[in-house]
Image (cartoon, rainbow, N blue to C red):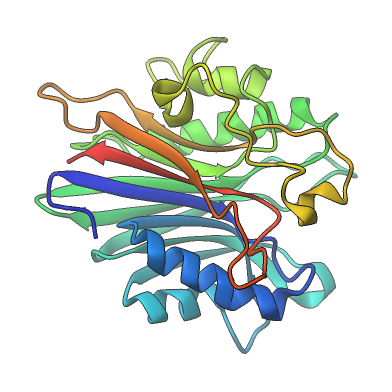
Length: 266
């Protein structure tokens, strides 16, 4: 557990029910329990109508949770979730832009978390995945940032997590960090990994992971934790960011993505 001066945030794509999902589930749960993050943002979380994996994980951890269904491959929902050790005061979901013929039913989820002495606005999303869908992802990013803007005012810098399926110098990521024209005037976020490790690649899609390696795709950083600029006095400052979920648990690789953990000043 993090102390009362730091906020620990984790983001992870759980790879839905692909691969050996029944064997992967305990490895996912064990990794989440080991990390002990205060807030956990998850993508590709399944719900088959009888069981919701986000609810099961939250129950094991003793956390509150919010769930947002998106696509429904083979009749089984694939969505986003936010888990929190503190109460969730409210949550909202929006649908993101989907181009005709390439609509992957992407959504964004917001949870208002009642942290120690302050409400923390947290957003979780997952964007289109094909490499030639940057034009779609840019419109999805605009939708996410407009969704964030509508939740102002904030007493704590907003946190945005997810699998963006885009590398740091892509137009869509630069729109978030203010290195390209921003969709919402006055809103730009810090990339936690780049803030802490500007000289390191930070691949979250890596051929070292056999689930990812079998795709033969290039290694890249496509998963992010973003945060708003710190408040006076340092509240919300990014203090650390690291990769986890990057090793097998009792011989089982938990997901095809590595996870991120960031620590911010409370």
